[in-house]
Image 1 (cartoon, rainbow, N blue to C red):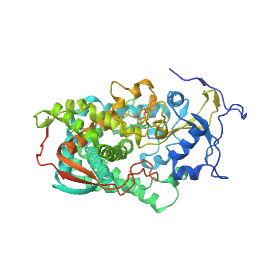
Image 2 (image 1 turned 180 degrees about the horizontal axis):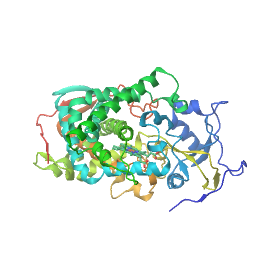
Image 3 (image 1 turned 60 degrees about the horizontal axis):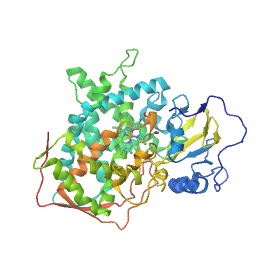
Image 4 (image 1 turned 135 degrees about the vertical axis):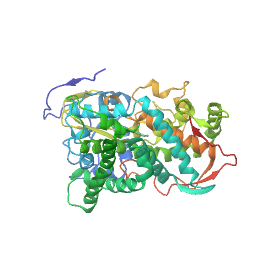
Length: 466
Ligand code: HEM
């Protein structure tokens, strides 16, 4: 259902604009409050004004928050000629490259996103799932019978292995993933608040970012050159991009291949890593869910010692736990677009050129939509309560509409493979008194330290892949 869009230009009239949230300071508006705790800021606005209100942020003539299922309909159901993501993701351009992903004109962006679809198709999932299971085994075999680990670190490390393997192939993972991880982190360290404002300033962190990008380009080109020279192929995302062609028959350049690989890596790595950590924290803060999860594992795997793609798909209880984790702690706490046309929302006029923002973190705790919103209750996604189905745009951890996450299945299977392994093989004891979100990061995970003790269970379940 397309939302009402009047394809006219903004007028200067302030008639019927959403209410302005109080507070803020001259020039910076609410930016300092947002930097300190964006969720608190969005929540304050929601408590005062409801779903639609204005904020003051630098570099945007107008910013409007749109929170809750009805406002989400207007936020997400927009065509690419009604909203632009280019300005919002400008800080990514030095990493992805010029003319790649959101920096490309809409029709090229659509084609490039289409290549992602191809790589994330069900037929590839079997190979990816095999990688998830094997990587989890390998990682946790290496920690011995007992270890104190940082769940945030484990999530990041393990998902860089699973991602580099799925994206660049097993050979690459075995030979180069150590260096890849190091250089990738160096590149990511260039993603900070300043990059939002001026991503090309001559700062040391930006120089390191650019050098890291060059090195990643060289590493990826080494594989593409080798595959072309030896006429070999891989079951990975790199191969999808090597085989892909634009509608006009043009193959992708090596720079485009690198940029798109980094884009999907960026989309899928930390998001899954922090969700891994939060899932472990919430499950073990609510241990009444562990036994039912183990029952599910026993029911699905029985006496078998192999996990198939179908088994991972069948882990519904675990799926609900991950979903509930993503409700309470969505790694992407806010989403933004630049409006290209005037729109109407909840009776207010929102003119073109406005930056519109949604906040999964606040929307997920609206009590009329998710009763007892601060409680971890995975059964709210089960058939009896089905709270997400009652309001189709209420649960938006993966976004919604045209630009909804393409990695939902990939992420869910990966998280299920890893937690299935841990639940069957380890007792987990949380070691911090509390676990709080760290809003200094672009993708919000638990603040470090985030330790847990893993103790191997006496009866080891060795699981191979089928
Ligand atoms: C728990 C893990 C993940 C979360 C919470 C997550 C969340 C999101 C969200 C909220 C968006 C929408 C962004 C927007 O509307 O501005 C998005 C888009 C996207 N995600 Fe994910 N994601 C996750 C994992 C992944 C993985 C594993 C992949 C790929 C392997 C992936 C690939 C993508 C892509 C390609 C898009 C862009 C879609 C488009 O613009 O059309 N994501 N994700």
